[in-house]
Amino acid sequence: MEAIKVVNRRASLKACLSGKKIDKADLIEVLNAARSAPSGKNQQPTRFLVVTDEALIKKLASEAFSEGNAMVGQAPVLIFACANPKDAIARDGQNYYLFDAGLAMENLLLAATDLGLATHVMTGYRETEVKRILALPEEIRVVAATPLACPPQKSYEEAAKDRLAGRTRKGLQEIAFLNTWGKGLA
Ligand SMILES: Cc1cc2nc3c(=O)[nH]c(=O)nc-3n(C[C@H](O)[C@H](O)[C@H](O)COP(=O)(O)O)c2cc1C
Image (cartoon, rainbow, N blue to C red; front, side, top):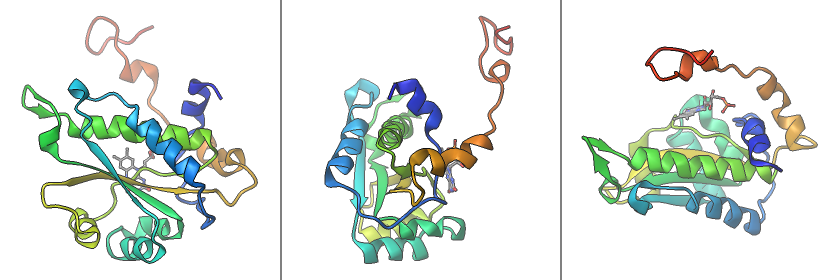
């Protein structure tokens, strides 16, 4: 599938998670896609903690995730993007670990979409609880999480159909300016 098609087909699908096992090769593929992402000075600060232990996933879902995200407990894989902010570049008072992790996570989401797997990037969890349950070192920040699962529907298209149909986005004029701040392209 072409990259732009995949970008446009990606949808957040926490409502479409089945417990079916994920192929190890697919898991490696999405993590390699994440690894290919750019990062400031190529520092590659992002680390991915992949949780496949069913009891641990259920514990995280019930004790760390918000009620609205508790369905991640149904997924066979739960991935956390983490980083030590000290590993990332800082410029003009901005630390880029969140940006680097975001780029890596998006690569992961897109690769999963290409493989027909459901993902849903989220931050609706209590970081302190995630860190406690996973025994993460103090200096590590949990940036975002996603379940990785097969949709129970016949195909990815079927699973993502309603979500994509209901998608809303700001118009191009609102988000892209030409030469002058606030001046739309047209
Ligand atoms: C930083 C971030 C945090 C998010 N946290 C949650 C969350 O806690 N729960 C949730 O259901 N979705 C969460 N989302 C998903 C967004 O709601 C979703 O990406 C947005 O509504 C657009 O929908 P789409 O991903 O299907 O295009 C999060 C997304 C991002 C980027």
